[in-house]
Image (cartoon, rainbow, N blue to C red):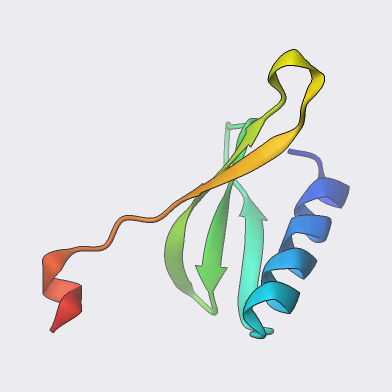
Length: 69
């Protein structure tokens, strides 16, 4: 993802979830996805999908059972 796209997605996450600590960051050696952080804590991966000319994004977040306590 390009830096302008990452900035737009970061703004979207902050506005949607009402939290300025959310940040979208570029992934090393990957151009089709970015990482989402809450401050310094990794939350998940944001994938870019532009099949058939329709651009969309998919957010994937794993939740470990030990984190539910």
